[in-house]
Image 1 (cartoon, rainbow, N blue to C red):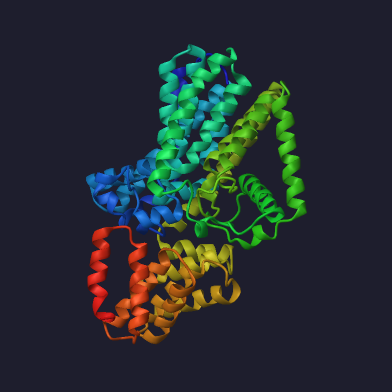
Image 2 (image 1 turned 30 degrees about the vertical axis):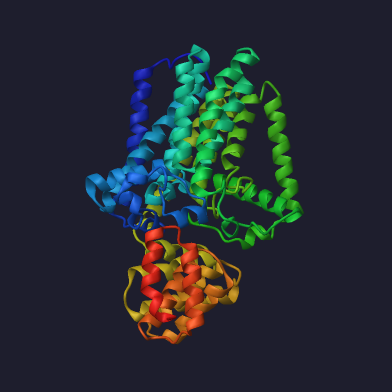
Length: 536
């Protein structure tokens, strides 16, 4: 990245503003969208959004936070601000996402302009990044806001630290650390930007080693302190055991998994097909020696490029891709699943690498490649515009996903969930039973507690209380997790309303397990009083 200021700052500022406006207009359809999928859990039903008094101590309900390893007070604070001003109006929440997407797109343009020192190339690359189809999900989905905030914090810290290095300002170095810290408090994967900035200092630093170390101290110390505090809040540094995706995979299979996820991410970056949604576990479990060899060759190539002076900038861009992808590859157990929104930051690393490659070519080739990148950004914008419409509501999202990933258990579960949450008639419940039964038949190991709970709830909606009770019992006796607590509570409620016969011993066991899983003392007292009659 060039240390000199931008040659035409006013023109650059107008171009950054234009790109931000284009990003907002491209995704403007999202304003008519509803709360979908996890929005209900993280926003609508989250008490910290409506009463943010304990935001830093418990941004999500305690049980949910511990189970999924979620500690995102900055993201929840932004939801709380939306709620305080506009209430639970989805338009306001979507508008905030659009504005954040515009700001991030403008910031990406500015970084690429400093990186390439050529305005047309920086604009083409940043437009391709901003219009990339995999970036629809974090913009059009309210729950995807954490990705935008984490990247905003990371990019701001990256720019500020670069500026601090050339001006020798300790204040800017501290502000850079604070920006990365806030990004990490928006989403846990923001911690990867500490590694990015350390790598940048190691590869491009211009001062003696002791000065570099002193400058890096706040960058390492502040996010690390936040991470440790997060551990005290959640009772651990990662999600509880059963919520770590592929946590039962070990040895050779685990390395194959890392390699397969890396190759899948790279494939989605250069060939973004399908809908922005989760992928199932099955394709990743099929990874083998070929995936490991291909990923190893890629990593060796990046290492060689980073070590050679002529290709060091290309290697750094690839390194940014890898470092920001590390949490998604499950080297760091801080999240669940794999989705297109996780590529928001890694694709920025690819843009850095491409920019460095193009700058190293002749002027004639540089112009030709820039024109080609501009054409690709237009094609990407058309694809992204079509995808935004699929995020209008729950049913539209998962119906489109079913056409892209037929039989995927994540998609079938999403269809069932949409029917149960957003439709009240028994016909929708019957349809949900069919989708959930397909998961049980074809993917029996896919999130069994959640599937069983929703099967029980669907049968309960159809007034088939005996069948509902059977599914609740299986979930309650064989598994652990939030869905198990919900299943036990529904089972006890059925017994309390005389719709299901429950023995005193069975009721007592359910109540004791339910009380043990509930961290809130007042809630425990309420549950104990409510169900005491069942086993007295």
